[in-house]
Amino acid sequence: MGHVLIGGGTGFIGRNLREILLREKYKVTVISRVKTGEEHIINWADIIHNGIPDNVNAVINLTGAPIMIPLKKFGYRFKKDIWISRVGSTMLLADIISQTQCKPNVFISVTNANMMYPSFGTWTEDYQPNSFMMEYNYFTSLGLYCERATEFLPIGVRKISIRTGTVLGHGGGFIKWLHHSTSMGLGATIGNGYQYQPWIHMSDLLNLILYSIENKKIHGILNGVSPEIATNGEITTTYAEISKNSVKFKIPNLVLRTLYGKERLELLSSNRQVIPFRTQEFGFQFKYSKIKNAMSHLLCY
Image 1 (cartoon, helix red, strand yellow):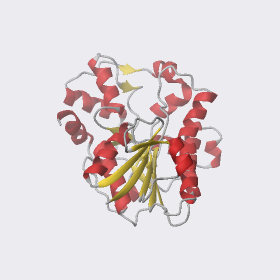
Image 2: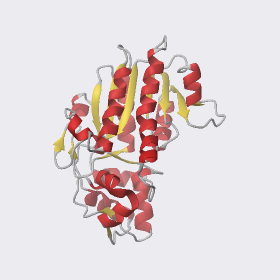
Image 3: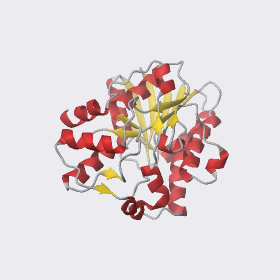
Image 4: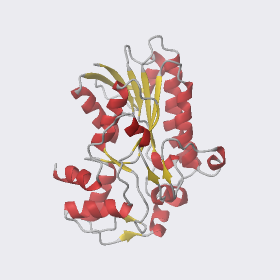
């Protein structure tokens, strides 16, 4: 089928993406920070010195240092590490691709929809953060510059930016956090739980990436979020009902602020409705568009 290069391919999304691509008969090479000795894994030093591997048809960048590390000071050094891992990796790949004789057909980057849209509103892919917001919001700047970094890609390479919601999948991410919280009888609802939380089933996100690789008409920004809008409280309650765990407490914002600080709390508790208008306009169909169906599949599968 082709050869796909994945930056950050050993992470939560990357591991699952590699599996589905292999099932579809793609050759997959993964860029990791550390060489493991496995044939399909290279590191960033290899990319810098040798360029991208031969005959790569698609490059997907999922690279990014973890943001939600409890009690870690959200200071200059931490912010710099996050910025370099996301914006820096995209710019590096774009620069190397521009120097490559046999260029890939498509470049796909993935950002967090919560970084890209203001609180209190309903948003489609048409919205673009502006410079006024950038001055006051680190995460908006981060997401915007991740997308702008793809502008360094040469003409002829299809550019796609997927703005994804909270990814619900086995073995990691939000589901793992919900499991630990509810199984210990602790709170799992963030704040009052009334805030809307964009979300997507892992299977739908992987299929959207695959669909974007194979559909040559797709370009630009796509919202990788479920069509069904749900609040954090609804997501948490649905998980608890299906898993037969109880949500005894809500986590107060004061506690969350102590754990994550003001800026990351705003990212966690912000209230936005995100609609996948262009995603569906391009013909993509979500398999798990309802939160109850998504949770049932994840918890009963």
